[in-house]
Image (cartoon, rainbow, N blue to C red):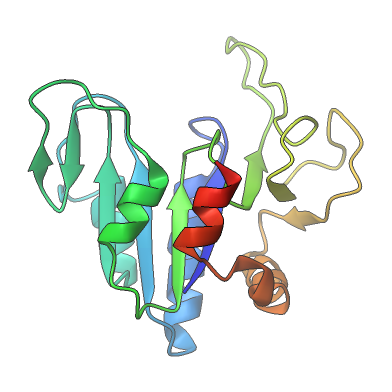
Length: 183
């Protein structure tokens, strides 16, 4: 399976982009799973919520996690530091793609989804400038706050993002043993 993360601030467009990518991959006959990081307490499968939206878009599996809960439902008695590799191990290894939303500090290859803060919000510093696991930036602004040699993908063109993913697919082959070596 290929694993690619999408990280960015809340409201940057990650969920919308993943919805579009899931649908495009499904149209190509690909099986897609999603791992999503949630914050603290959450419930799943309410119309309009992220997990419901991913499932409605055609994801084969959706694993949503926070420091208190994991769904495929697993309740933690105490707060639990969630490890993305543990979550990946929960998934069907026969899927073609796993799209990971959140986990911005993981050692997975990831696309940073970046938009500037809206008025009244604190600034949103970029992560790609100091995160060696960032492999591309998806944005809809003409100029990023810091220059980068990474590919810059048009957030408003999910087909372009998909084409880039497919062209780079070999890079995203997931191996639990390789992941352990990177930790």
